[in-house]
Amino acid sequence: MTALQRFISASGMTNLADGIAVVAWAWIASLLTRDALLVALVPVALRLPWFLLALPAGLVTDRVDRRRLIVAMDAVRAVAFLGAALALWGALPLEAAPAKGVSAPGLYAALLLAAFVVGGAEVFRDNAAQTMLPALVPKDRLERANGQLWSAELLTNALIGPALGAFLIGLWLPLAFGLNALAYGLAMLMVAGLAGQFRAVRTDRRGWKAELKEGIAFLRGVPLLKTLAWTTGFWNLFGTMTAVALVLHAQENLGLSAQVYGLTLAGGAVGGIAGSLVGDRIAARLGPVRTMQVMLAVSGPSFLAMGLAPGAWTLGLAFAAMEFCSFVWNVVSVSTRQRLIPDALLGRVNSIYRLLAWGMMPLGLVLSGLVVSLGETFMARGAALVLPFWAAGIGSCVVAVLVWGAIRRGFAAISR
Image (tube, rainbow, N blue to C red; front, side, top):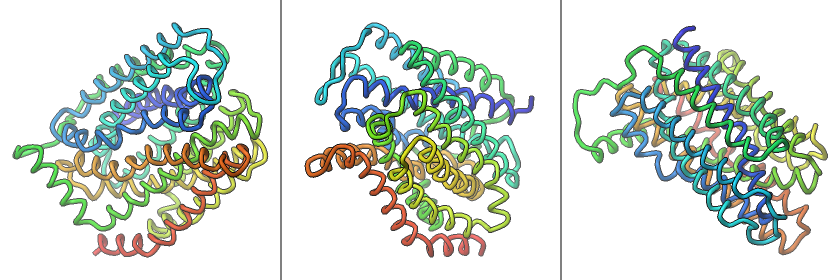
C-alpha cells in the first residue's frame, strides 16, 4: 500500500465515523426536543470551532509535524465520542420529546459538549490533512489525488456512514457514537505508520502575530483566493441552512424513518462521489473558470428542488445534484489553493481561507432555526420547514451572479 493509499484509507475510516454521526447528532437531538432552534444548536456546537479555532489551527499546522497532529486529534475525537455514548447509555430510556425545552437536560448538555470537542479536533485535523497531501503527490496530480481522497471520504461519510448510523440508531442508540471511537483508533494507527517529512520547512520564527499577518497578507494579495473563500463560505452557509430543516422536513412533511432518511442522504453521496471522480476531467475539458461558473449556476436550483421534492427518491436526486456541484467545485478550488500557496505558508493561509469558508456554517445553522421559528408565526409548521430551502436556493443564485466575473478575472490574473 502506497503512502497516498494509506492516507486515503485513514481518511475513509474517520469519515465513516463522521458519516455515522451525521445522522446521529441531529436525530438524537430531535429525540430530546422538537424545537427547531434547540435541535440546530447541536450541529452549531459541532461547527462553531471552525469560526473560533481556524486561525490557531493554521499556526499550529505550520509549526509541528502534521502527521502527529492528525494522530493526536483523532485520539481526542475518539474520547469525545466514547463519552457521548456513555452519557446516552446512562440516560436511557428517553422520555418523549417536548415541543419546547428538552426532555433530558443533562444528556443534551453532554451532546453539546461532545459536539464542540469533536468539532474542535476536526478543525486541527482537517487543516493538517489538506496541507499534508501536497507532500504525498506531485503538484500536477493534485486534482486527481483530491478527487480520489474525496470519493473515498464520501463513500464512507455520506453513503455508508449515514445508512449505518440509521441502522445503529434503530438497533441501540449508544452504538451510533460508540462505534466511532473504534474507527478513530484504527485511523490513528494508519496515519502513525506513514513515512516521510511532514513538517513545514521554516527558516525563521517571528512570533504568532507576525506569522499570522504573513498568512493574511498572502491571501489578500491573491484576489482569486479571496473570491473562492467567500463564495465557498456562502455556499456552506446555504448548505447548512438546509441541514436542520432537512431532518425535520423528512420526519414531519415526508414521514421518513431514520433508515429511509439515511438512504436519502446516501443519494447525495452518490452525486458527491461522481463529482469527485470526474471533477478533474470536467475541469480539463471546460477549464477551471467555466467549471466553477457552471457549478455555481446549478447549485441554486438544486437547493430549491430539495424543498419542492415530494418524496424520498426525488429528495435524494435533488441532494445528489447539489453534492455533485459542490464536489466538482472543491476539486478545482482546493487544488488551486494547494498549488498557489507555498508549503511554509500553507497551514496558515489554508486556515484563514477555511475560516471564511467554514466559519459561515454556524451562522447558517442558527439562521435555519430562526427562519423556521419565525415562519411558524404566520404559516403552518410544514410550510415553515421548507423556508430554509427557498432562502438557500435564492441566495445561491444571487451569489453566482455576483462572483461570475470575479472568478474569470481571478484566474486570468494568476495565469499572468
